Length: 345
Image (cartoon, rainbow, N blue to C red; front, side):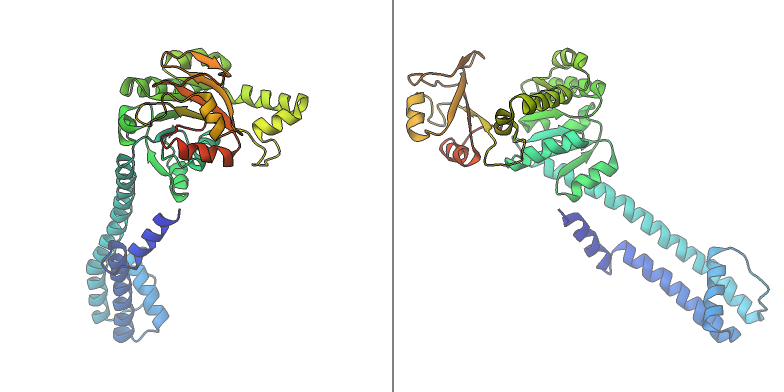
């Protein structure tokens, strides 16, 4: 997570870096000026140094009496020194701007190397929770936000983050939407999330889009804008609180209300294909291998659900199997299904 700060320190330590050269130039000018006035005017080191700063910063002289030779040296320092310091400062500014551009290019380059990743739009509290959950599952992530401060904080945590407006095509292309698995519209603005959904759906018609809705009236709008699913944090949080009061044991298992990871129930969505050699298996076959797993539902290629499929139910190519269990049990299923999909809860 600190790789970017470490790289910056390395650049500073390199003698051939622009900042190092600028610092050496400034120190050299100050040293020459201080030694020159000390030798010519026989001033103390501090007076000579202070007078050099007077000259280089162009704030004006006081009543220092100076010889003709000293005046000539001061004129030389004005012409050469001020030019040198100005050049040094311009190099520092140019380096800072170039470094920022290079960092952005590095982020885009990293994003372009990813595939089957998730794009999270918005680095607020909701967006960071989404990123944390995806990261726990080992899923590659690219984040997009307009706020440079939030993007920098995300980069410091090791997240591939891009500065941009996710309602514009360029930001999504930089994030590699054509190779991505899903998009999360997680900003705090429903209007912005609508535009994000419209843009993402236009660029990648088949991609999964999950959107956040602050106002429940926006749920239908986000769905029409192309969101595959819409989550209302307010409604979800309210239901969770109500469940924890009315059915605390259920809430503890479903939501992990006491933050005990071993008790919380997790879900998985498993694709069934001929390629992974899982088509043709029955629920009975899976129960024999994984008796501690709960088989919640299966969904066929037409989107129809079979809730609580019986033991004789056969899984076909294109089906999805929804299962639930604890992490240690699901890990065994994931090894059995190497091409499993994403965590649902």
